[in-house]
Length: 145
Ligand code: DQA
Image (cartoon, rainbow, N blue to C red):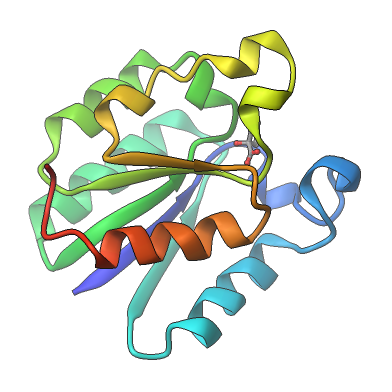
């Protein structure tokens, strides 16, 4: 059983992008940190700037089977993508919403997540550790509840 780590728009720019908000680790550093921390697990990593590609990836792993869950940092899509929300809602696989920054302590528009309601939970504000906590959350679950 694998865990898909799915990252949306602008997360490919981590390390260079607003390091005061998102830190100096690159997405590759974060991914490697997960592999090092959970050597017993199998991870798959996917990032896209494109909303459609994220949806297709989600459908693909749902149809393929063999996935324990998804860690999703949807970036700005978090705040407005009803298409992403509907996709998460329509799959059986549990999705944990993660954010590096605390979206509730920033601009007003970031305080609304249109995907939280259809995710199994939300982890926000712990930097790269949000992903590690997300993995732990998935390990403690038996499926979408
Ligand atoms: C983010 C928070 C979003 O508001 C923002 O658009 C991002 C990153 C985070 O990880 O803190 O791109 O999801």
